[in-house]
Amino acid sequence: MKPAWSCLNDVTIIDVSQLLPGPHACSLLRQLGAQVIKVEQPGSGDTARQLGAHVYAQFNRGKRSVALDLKTDAGRGAFLDLVRDADAVVEGFRPGVMARLGLDYDALAAVNPAIVLCSVSGFGQTGPYASHAGHDLNYLALAGYWATPVQVHDVVSRPRVRVSDYAASGYAALSLAVAIMSARQHGQGQHLDVSIHDAVLSWTAHGAWTARAHEDTPRASSSVMPENDLFETRDGRHLAMGILENKFWDNLCAALGDAFPALRDPRFATRAGRSGHKVEVNDLMAAVFRTRDLAEWEDFFAPFDIPFSPVLGAGELFEDPHVRAREVVRRVDGGIAVNFPVKFSLGLPEGEDFVAGVGEHDRR
Image (cartoon, rainbow, N blue to C red):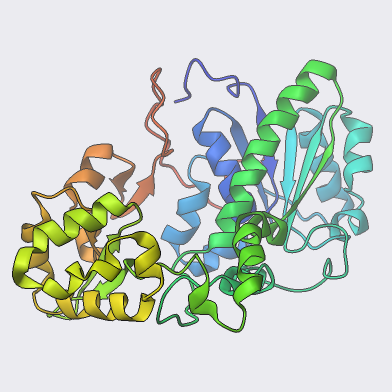
């Protein structure tokens, strides 16, 4: 079902991208009402299918699948037939591939002047890295993700989610919606150049710029806050303490009472004071939280207004009462599906759960 109120209800997007960024951008717009036709290589389909059924389903539920070999005249002709009636095309090839296939923006606009072509690539269509290979880690490394220190005892550790891919998919979806609506209003399409590296750089640039002043002394950076960190508990679990405002430090000290008097040192009473003694404060807090198991800390902090959270394991996450109440995740076919994570007052119907096989919607 589609949301009856959505301006995307009669929008058609052709998704010829693979893996995460392009398919996720299309999936977001599909959940908001657009029809998405996925064009896949006959036989093998999207590379994501090789990563497991649940991985592929995550970004491609509810899409129709058409199998076309774009390297053949017949495949290109069928693709252009789809373009004639579509609003947008999303592709994720390296720069130049669409042109070599005879399917660049000019070719698409020749059959549909209002078409929007969204090209999602690692480093964009221009620039010295445009043709370079890359995946999420590469874009993060070259965007200064690890240039900003954030912990007193900082280490380089890979992110647990594909940060740059999700950044790019969000920007792509937003840009597509605006470009499609503009094309419908004015009759003129355009080419969107979405660089995954650009997308995550827009998130990291400010922090990295500030960090330049402390490259030799990273702990001195304002981004390193000793009381805002992850701490290990006695049972080897971890908790997150998100103290930023001074009132939460005061609340923490009040909650702990006289049990840990070292935290009440007047030197630590202000954020500036704690910043001047980062290692000492962080080590003191680490010692405090190693005195109890995680469950004990959960019970202890429950009555207090303190930004404390247990670090949930995979087996705990989906049973968490808040996760269940918000209904962003639902169970489907032995796995899960993720709903659009914004609550619209006019409502969004529950998403379509079918996952098409390669070429399931070929024209016969």
